[in-house]
Amino acid sequence: MSIPLEKASTLVAAGDVRNRDWYIDKLFHSFMFICGISAVIFVLGIFVFVFKEGSGFIIHQLDWAEFFLSPKWRPTSAIQASYGTLAMVAGTAAVTLISMAVALPFSFGAAIFIAEFARGKTREWLKVVIELLAAIPSVVWGFIGLMIMNPLIIDIFDVPIGLNVLNSGIILGLMAAPIITSIAEDAFKAVPDTYREAAEALGATKWQVIYKVVLPAAKNGLLSAALLGVGRAFGETMAVLMASGHALTIPGSVFDSIRALTATIAAELGETPVGSDHYQALFAIGIFLFSITFIINMTADLIVRGIKNQ
Amino acid sequence: MNSHSDPHTDSGATRATTPAATSPKERLERSAATQPAHKISIRDLSIRYGPFTALSGVNLDIPVNQIFGIIGPANSGKTSFLNAINRMDMMRANMNVQGSVLFNGVDVTSWGNVYALRSKIGVVFPLPVGLPLSIYDNVALSPRLRGINNKSQIDEIVERSLKRAALWDEVKERLGSLGSLLSGGQQQRLTIARALSQDPEVLMLDEFSIAVDPVTTMRIEDVLKELKNQMTIILVTNLVQQANRLADRTAFFLNGSCVEVGDTDALFNGKVRDQRTDDYINGRFG
Image (tube, rainbow over all chains, first blue to last red):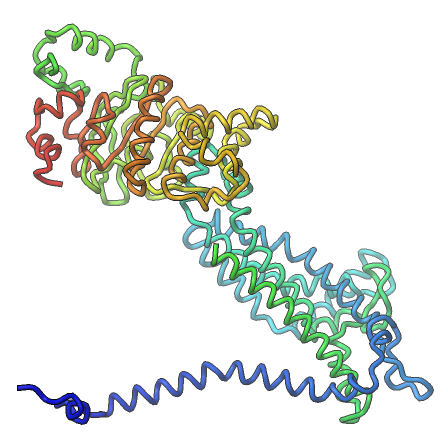
């Protein structure tokens, strides 16, 4: 005999009870879901907040040409306030350039050594030490720039001041190096060993294997590592504030002091009345920074995605 | 079909116990064994990975310009055997090789420049390895490694290698596209073309047909029959019939030792010294 279909749907199978395990599972799911989307909520929240604070100024008062093309940042001038970021952008760019010139050769070299040459214990130790380097707080780096690099640069290059593009570039390069190294190492490790074996079987030396096969295969990962390093150097505040000299000039040489976009916000925001033009102009710089780092990280992410889809 | 009744091995110890040669062909082979007509000679070869022994006490000779087949089930030491010949053991910290591998009569461990040795020995791996370079660059890699920079010379090597590997007609219009995007069978022929681009004296193929369709396998087999006039080929295969079709001589490896070496015709006609060889060839185990 069979149960009619409409009746069967109302029946409850024996043993179909929502017990404790079922509720714990549901609870666990909801909790993980909240944790999972919290990052998205925070990012959106920050985005909205920064835009809200800066939007009034951007929409009604901001002279775009002045903002991007004038080097004069005089937010507190009583006669004529001006909000030009060109000097800061140039300063930040110069420091980032120097930092990459310092960081990239070292980081890629270290990554090649760890991924291709180091074995066993050496490799593990190196990775731990490099991670340790990444954990040094930025204010400590700033301190090193201020107290060690500053007199060193004055002595070696015989310049009047050691807080300049060179100093902050080196400090930022050392700060970005661990991140670039570990991402570059991942890129090298993602190259299948079969590639190395195939090249070695053709009689390629270790260097030829790396240069002709591993580097081309890992180039997207390396590019993305470099971009993330750029993002790190661009967005760093405290160390740059301490090591750059904080002087509003367009740098003509690596021995000129500069002022970074980030450092300007950090140094001035506490001194401005909430809601004033100056306050809002600082938020406009924040939006500008946010957009640039967003673009850099997005590009890096797209490149990494490109590797996976290959 | 074969005139001699006793398929011999090349090991010195067993050779002493075999009856005197009767047929002219066998006498010829015996005398050849004493001359350096062997491209590669293996003496007392043992390979260990830590405590695990992959291969022990192998003695055999690989004649010039022949296809030498190696058959045997998985884990019988076939791939380790190939790795010992082109000294890939140097890259594996735990691989320990004992005994000697003579290449053109000289021990491979005595080569000061191991890269030069490897460039004389082409290798084709079980799974095709299309390097993430263009088809052209894949094949041009080896000549470039050897320092050839002349464009027309490389062009010629690339074309000749791809033709020899029976791939030219399929890719000549798109030499610039990525080698890793070719189909499996094409990639395997690309790998063979790459191995041929170094004009090797020995070509070692390790179960090349594992990821290749039957039609392509047959095409590659035809290629190998052509190539053996120009080079010595070592064919490790998991297909017993492939060894039967191609190999002049065949060795049977089992559990890390070389059970038997003999003329392929003899082995496949039941003229075996060891019953296990016959069982394996006829599919009664393995």
